[in-house]
Each structure stands twice: as C-alpha cells, then as structure tokens.
Amino acid sequence: MATAKEPSFRESVDLMFNRAVALMDLPPGLEEKIRVCNATYTVRFGVRLRGQIHTFTGYRSVHSEHMEPVKGGIRFAMSVNQDEVEALAALMTYKCALVEAPFGGSKGGLRIDPREWDENELERITRRFAYELIKRDLINPSQNVPAPDMGTGEREMAWIADQYKRMNTTDINSRACVTGKPVNAGGIQGRTEATGRGVQYALQEFFRHPEDIKAAGLSGTLDGKKVIIQGLGNVGYHAAKFLSEEDGCKITAIIERDGALISDTGLDVEAVRNWIAKHDGVNGYPEGKYIKEGAKALELECDILIPAAMEGVINISNAANVKAPLIIEAANGPITAGADEILREKGCVIIPDMYANAGGVTVSYFEWVKNLSHIRFGRMGRRQEESRHQLLVDELEQLSADKELGWTLTPGFKQKYLRGAGELELVRSGLDDTMRAAYQSMREVWHGREDTHDLRTAAYLVSIGKVAASYRALGL
Ligand code: GLU
Image 1 (cartoon, protein in one colour):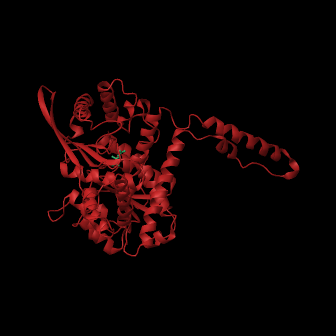
Image 2 (image 1 turned 90 degrees about the vertical axis):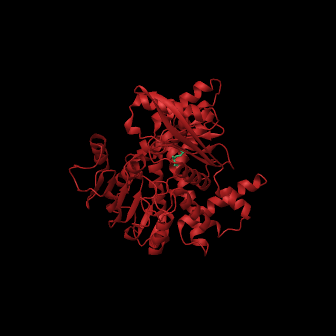
Image 3 (image 1 turned 180 degrees about the vertical axis):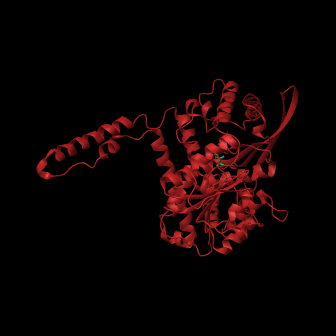
C-alpha cells in the first residue's frame, strides 16, 4: 500500500489531471470546474442486526454533471472513505468521456466488510443504504445510476432496483435506476464479464499496432505472452480467463489476498478460481509455487502485468522493482502518481485505468438503454438477418451441388453464417467497437503530439477535451 510520502488517491488523480491539463489551453476557471468534485453526500444509518443497532457510513460522490445521469459503481469495503470515493468519481467522469458513454461521473461506497454478514443481513443493510440515496435522488434513472464495484455484484443491484421500485411505484423506467442487475431482473447479457472482456479487447487492440508493441519493447502477438494477474475477483478472473483461453496468453502468476501462485508453464484460471471459492485463498493450491508475500510477485519478470484489484498497489516503494514492460490497469488507480513517474522513466508502457477498465460502464450504458427502450437488443432484427443469410446459403448450396465446379462450402460455414446476432453477440460487438475507437483516439494523441509521451496523458487530453466541450456547449 501507499507510504506516507505518497499523496492520497484523490490527490494522485488530480496530479495526473494537472499534468495533462498543463498541455491544454483551457481558461483557468474551466480547468478548476472540471477538476473539482461537485458534491459528496455522507450518510450514517443504523440497522438492527443480531440484537443490536449497528451504524454504517456510506457515501455517494458526484464529480461532474456536465452530462446526466451521472454514473459509477457502489463499493462495499472497509477501506471506503471520502477521499477514495471522490477519486473514483473523478475517474468515472474521465472514463465515460473517453469511451463516449453519455454520463457524468459519480461513485458510492459503504464502509463494511461484506464477508462479515450473511445474505439476509446484507440485504437489509443494502436496502437501507439504497433508501437513503433514493430519497435524495442520488439513485434515479435520469440523475444518478449506480452499478457494481468492489464487494458488490448483481445480487446487490437487484436489491437496489427493487428498493427503488417500491419507493417509485409508478416510474415506468424504474429498472434503469441501476445497472449490473441479473438478466432476469432487467440486466443485460455480458455485463458481468464486461470489464474483464474490455481488458481483453484493449490488449487485442494494442497488439494490432506494431509501433505500440515496439514502444513497450515487445514483439509478436498476444499468443504465448507471460501475464501476471493481481486480484482474481470479477475483473481479474474474466480478463485472465479470456486471455488464456482465447488469446493464448500464459498466466504465470496470480496474486490474491493471502499470497501468490507462480508457475512458468501457466496456471489454470478456472481451477484457481474454484480453489479460492472453496478455501478462501490460493494457499495449498496443488500446482505452481505459493509465496506468502503476494506483492513480491508484482516484481517478477513477465510481458504484461494486470493489476485488477485495489488502488495504490504499485507505489513509490515498489515501482522501481517492477519489471513488466507493459502494464494494463484493470483496477481503478492501481498505480500512484509517483509510481507512474518512475515507471514512465523506465520506459514501461501503461494502458491507463480510465480506458482499460471502461468495459464495465460501456455495457452498463447498453443496459441502461435497454431498460429505457423496454426491449432486448436483437429482438427485432435477428430472424430477419437469418432469413437473408439463408437466401445466400441456398444459392451457394446450389453451386456446390454442381459436381463439375468441384467447389464445396467449408465445413461449419453454414451454421456460423446462418446464426443471427443475439443480445450477447451485440453487446460484445458494441464493446469491442468502443474499446477500439477509444484506443485509437488515445494513440492519435500519444503519437501525434510532440508534448505527449504516454497513454495516460493522452487519455486525459482526449477526455478533458470532451468534458470541456460539453461545458462550453452549456454556456460555461
Ligand atoms: N464500477 C465500475 C467502474 O468503476 C462500473 C461502473 C458503471 O458501470 O457505472 O467503472
């Protein structure tokens, strides 16, 4: 974790913002308006549990309302505090602008260790927290739309959606008050995997650009690359799973709460995940080497390092020892401002959080649109698409029946070509397109401006430019 000399998380985000904004020509008033967090609401509420009243502290921070609703997850963790929630809300503003999700930035948090409470208790606590936010319009389909974050998932989102519905019985759009819900409660296919899937798409896009691969001192494709994953939660698990199963990456280390597993031949992500679920940690896993001091594995040789858990894990105390030539920030803020400087000087390429983990909010955007349109993506067009494809396949089959031509359809072509896109395919296609377009907007600035030498500064330049344009359009 960050040492005393390190700035706070919010200061760290502001430092990175300042570094980028110094290269822009914004009026100083507008610069300040974009940087500051508009408002943070703190609530303390009591819930009677286990025969006594327990008081919980929660936050919802709104960083920027240049677009509404504002968007961002709700985190359940003991480390939650105002500074952290404000830093995360700011990152949401920049993230949404970068991937063109039409939202301002917000974030929420509840100081709680979810592992200490059973499901029924958690439901009562979550509903009570949601009640406090809903009655102040800090959860509302047109003003503020939360989503899952660390320590929360679709279960909590379903409780929040239901709580909102109970308090707004005539709101036809009530389901759009929160995203990341289970599919059978108004969610969308592909939301749970979305952030990890986005990390995979981001890396695939990076490896389409030889100049960028070279900048990181790497070569070739994703196939065979040695990858270290820190945190096998929802984001890290999906990223590691897709990269190893679909792109040929080798997961050479997995870092978890109780230590790290190391294996040069590559770890089986699914098996490690199952082990953690049963044993509450990686210790004892039969393959690879276990080390107790997990953070040391951040310093191992690899091609790609993926911090996918907490902020500040790469800081001024360990940055100099990190050997990865390419780091992709699947978590929010895993590299502090000080560490960022050390790594940049070493020539490490960092794919920044506001881009790398934007897959979650991108698919949240699709879910919100689905809820407002009250129809599943693909429902109108799928069979029409299939019948048009059938016409073409029929013609091709006639050709292949002609023995003289000596031509046949490739095995499997027909099935693949005939299947129209359902919701999951459309969500993945929209996410892939978003990740490609956002990467290209960053790299244009990275390579196109003489004063910009890294992707993070480029990302800030693109997103601050977009937020500034919105404010100008509002007459500010
Ligand atoms: N908590 C996620 C993030 O940090 C998702 C936010 C959302 O979907 O609104 O990006």
